[in-house]
Length: 324
Image 1 (tube, rainbow, N blue to C red):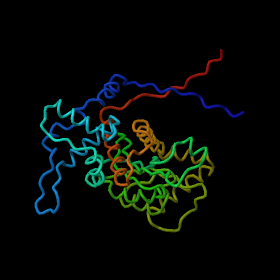
Image 2 (image 1 turned 45 degrees about the vertical axis):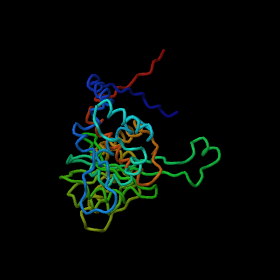
Image 3 (image 1 turned 45 degrees about the horizontal axis):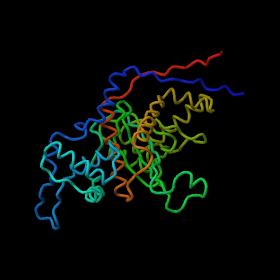
Image 4 (image 1 turned 90 degrees about the vertical axis):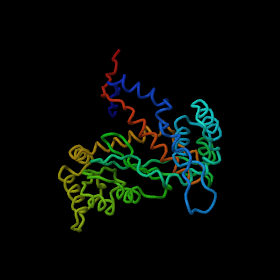
């Protein structure tokens, strides 16, 4: 019989600091800027046709952030904002739930980069998010209808801080490497290493990474062959293929190669994905494509704020099985 894997238990060593950060997640002053009232009303735009906007993008972003953090429906969000402004004794109008929904459709264009960090390492990965459709029991019993679908959330994170650097929402037909090519162009600073799983093993993506003078930490597939091109991206991939073959060419050799090149850093993006789905769930609440893109970006902004408040630090311990 194959040996069962030993059980492990994670011990947090900075529980006091991490506990305070969890408490601070419910602090309204964390999510509302001190100068929010000054930026609440949209500035008048000269020479623009149509009715001017009442609320600024900052006001709508604050509303969507509160909705994400406290998991509020849009109508409940309107009531929450009204009571909040009343308690703060601020004479400001409150956007209606329909205004918030309508304005969020073009808000993601003005959100920009999710973090101002200039990382040395970047890790790419993607995950699926459910949108409108039936529940799991109905699909398993009767099959899915045409309306059931998924979106793919592509993330680029900084492994040293855990912050999300870039996020892009696509339909489920987009390839990981194809989307990462465009995201790589938005990465600023002197990047030294780029990590990704086998889905990112494409020549075009490797060329984008090489253009940034960075090294690819991407495992080639098991049936990969030496390429004939003389460009830097191909030569780097050839070196990885040769190294794995030199170590034996089997699964153990691939595992050893990953340890030698520090590929384990890629697992940190799995932690970010796990935190995203644990905190916000695996569903998108918005119905339209534009609102879904905004919703995913706002969730990443909230996740970054929670990350900066504090993260757990600790170690894994192997738990010995009792022989009694």
